Length: 239
Ligand code: PGA
Image 1: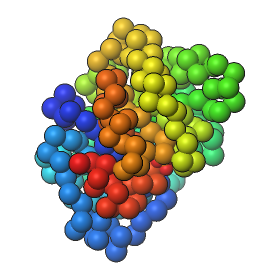
Image 2: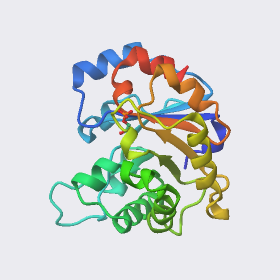
Image 3: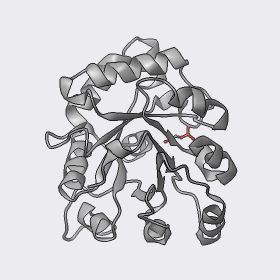
């Protein structure tokens, strides 16, 4: 498994249901990497092995994985298959999957467990809704998500956590820098096991705010949606 400790920052692009071959070819011609950062491009699964994988600091990642290992589960993609084509990362439990595909913490736990068993690093997404934030429930919600979605086999070397407040995703809104720092600190101390985990921030990250967010003590990188589709903007986030 890849050594996460080798990188000062981890920047993940989540393309969601976007992209085509022409887009990918142009993207790679223009992408400029930074040797200190680990960059993971989570493309739609059909393009996973079209990306330039296993460059020293550029990796391809899946956006989701099956809870099943193999068998009669039409349309699914297993952790073992990801490993077979040398994919080293997969998002798990993105809020869009939780919301539109009814993914529970238990499902996310099982998917993450399968990934770890197959040497693929799960990037487990957690985050609160606006209503939960306004009712001061953020810590309670995160604590429950952490307790239930992170498998026993997880550790700081084989798992990444991404904090994505749901109200910040695709809205242009972000928590203040102090709030991000405070929540990341909470995540890393909610359980002693999490002290050394890499915790990424996601939700309306763009070129104009990424430096400030990434320079926070307890932020180890970011998960970028919309802004990762514009390669020039993504280049300045990576740099
Ligand atoms: P956004 O999406 O950067 O467009 O807010 C982030 C995500 O959904 O991971």
